[in-house]
Image 1 (tube, rainbow, N blue to C red):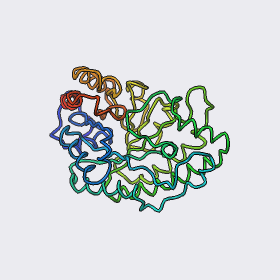
Image 2: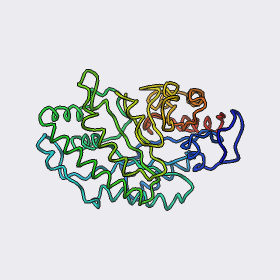
Image 3: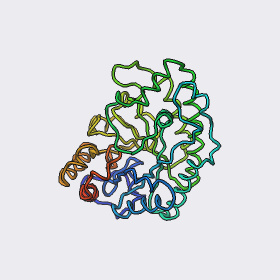
Image 4: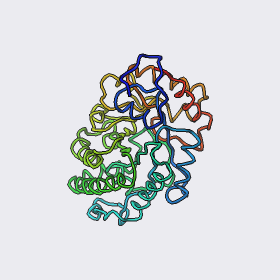
Length: 341
């Protein structure tokens, strides 16, 4: 594969793997790779229905890589309702149904995909997992940007005031279990992980600073170390980042964030971010409420903002499949296929 090409020239035809890996290496491919993802129906979380849902998504939209959803949860003996319940948060063995179902999904998808597409699997960081122990979402929807309205995180912050050591120890135990799970995901066929982090849950506006740095960041990095040999790790910066620059220094191949809805813009970070960029489409407004031509304009604008930086085109987070017209998803593909550097 050649080095950076002059704008407007075309490479020989690339497949999806070559196209994504070209961007991860900092080189311009024939055109920007793209992908997008959503939470599937409750009966498509594990087993054959989950396999078929993921494969139908790949075949319908021709995405350049597959982000495997993970709504199977984290093994937990009981719900966490009180700071004292954190003592029961242990280290799963690794063969619990919640982990096993995701691993089986990865193995089945790898068998179906072969090596024609890179596949990364969703992993939520330790704080996010603890949130789900407090209140598991009944229905998965695109995230609410108002971090202060997140009740589970408010409960965790209250626990911190009661006993920071208990919360810290629970986060460490969760991250240790997740690191083991990540290693098993790679062995099951994943090419890497999609680690979801969100610091404005930990430090919403007007709250004390330094909690993420003191208690959470090390657990993020512990999880990523388990995936350091993988070929494609992506960090998903959810919400409105309190410290985007700190996340931009994480040892990952790419970062995905809501540049339209939450910021910063692609142009702001293109010149000062090491990992490859993965952004460009507004999942909260343009995808559900815009027209296909609005989506196409965002894709073209994202490529323009990136300048000489190669970019992966994607929404800032999940989209709502009940609200987003199919035509708008196809517009992402059409615009990415037409885009030229």
